[in-house]
Image (cartoon, rainbow, N blue to C red; front, side):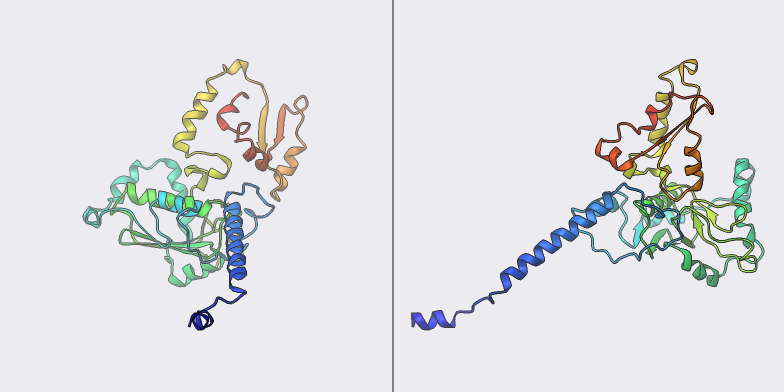
Length: 311
């Protein structure tokens, strides 16, 4: 009976344990690579200059211990939906724009200029969907709730911090932000040329534009912080810079034009700027910034508040 019970006992296949070990190692390697990518600070050529997309946004299932999930938890934002207040607040009256128009600073007139192409015709659903061909993500605000539809992965934390900006707007003016559907691209250079698209302007938000482009400008994401290079939100960064600028009297500061940054981003202007690195001839000091090395050393040499020693 003992021999029979031994023979009848279920046995695990010989390959099961090695397979499980291999799967576990592969999973650990994959998580390491994802985590390493998220914390990477190196600006690779073209990442923030060439048109989106540069790679398709993958489906994500965040683990509680990943940096991404902690960041999303901080801004209290689920993956596709961002509730931000008690819905009872929605009953509050909206702004009376005609009463506030006279109080707006002069630079607000640029908003009217940027939206002028759609003043008479309005923005159609077809135009919004056409903008999807150039967008990294779509944002819909409906009845006080923000919905996100990501298409492509933005460089570093641009997407997340930009969404944080929208959430701050909703929290500051609860119940007063109208329903809106918009497309957003997170690369730097505008791409919707006014001459080429004069007959059918496409509404697309991004951080930069020119008079020759239809791209609608939106505040740069670094206003709310750029964690990869140790830039704090402007509300925290500005007091530090102000304090640093007061460390030396104006007369004691070096009479030079100072620039420090990464020229290796496919930017002809930055490459030309390197030619001006002559303190005697041009009164300029141009310095190359290695962000990878700077990250290793704790960003001690790149703090903005420590660079106020120039006029």
